[in-house]
Image (cartoon, rainbow, N blue to C red):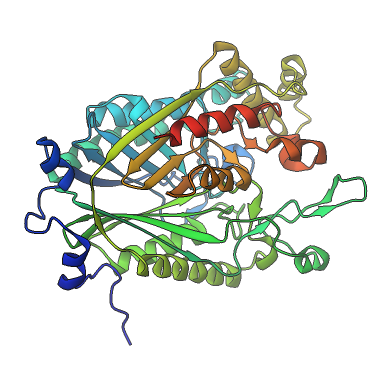
Length: 465
């Protein structure tokens, strides 16, 4: 039996949800303020790398072929001051100068400023991981290593500008917003679960796992809820944003480009509702993966895809559109500290050591890029889109799930949906309690543990009001 699309809302339900029915094409916010009506324009464009392009920053097999294409999808919100742009990209990460360039390109196309643009990544690993500064450092070695193809990167920015400019004339009135959530079963599990008697991490569960001891251990601290925020023109759903915190990899590393199980679930939902733009955001999943439920097999990818898709559908079942009465964008700049364990002279020696495998030369280049960024005092931008009692929070890099849960506690009477994997410069961002435990994420975190207090203040500022 074919399932009825969740976006279909009966006329009775729609009228009950709106005390201001009768002029559905004009937002209640605009009518109350006597201003231009709110409008929304969705856009999408291809960001699939060509054959031979580095994947995951050059650490794994480069592109051999494409199993399913990668996309950048977003929306422009008009009528609430300068345009607001939110975009999510099927890439591993966009770091430092590259992230600033993405925000600047989208801002230019939309006629706004970069501080009113959020660019997040989903973090699939058979995908580009881009850092312009690191690419320059690697190129100085003259031995063929690559982090990214700058020409392809520039081409993607050109596509971004063109997609936004083409979308703006098609903007639709946006009158209602809704939020929902549903529990996802057997996907997320905490990676940092096996502690020794000394409190140190003795081994960890990755995105996939075949260790019986680790598989048998509990899920640990996660956020099991998949959240949805949707925008409507009257009874018609135009944009649906879905949020769930986990590393989105089932298997990777052989050069087969894929949006992996989270992207595949989003694409399946998009086929259900071709008239609605579906976006998927990875929450604060730096210490979260599917390892308890994923053995890395192709069959596991199919199962994980179905579970995320089921979570999206279930989350949308609880959507109850309400008239938009309040829209606000809040940004907060934070200057994050460099991890003192990393010394530039040592990192440069590792980069220059031709005995090291490429991954162990490129990673130091990325850390040097971060050190230089901090020295220039170039901030990380946190932002939040506030619509009625909904806050859509945009966080940097591989933030730990504790930050997402903390954000929800900061605003217990509001619906807070968190998207991490924005500016990837900091790499992993543990909470301070995790630094003494060690482990992989702590060992490669580009920030000192003081990042916890600084980032938390920035979150509070972005969520305030």
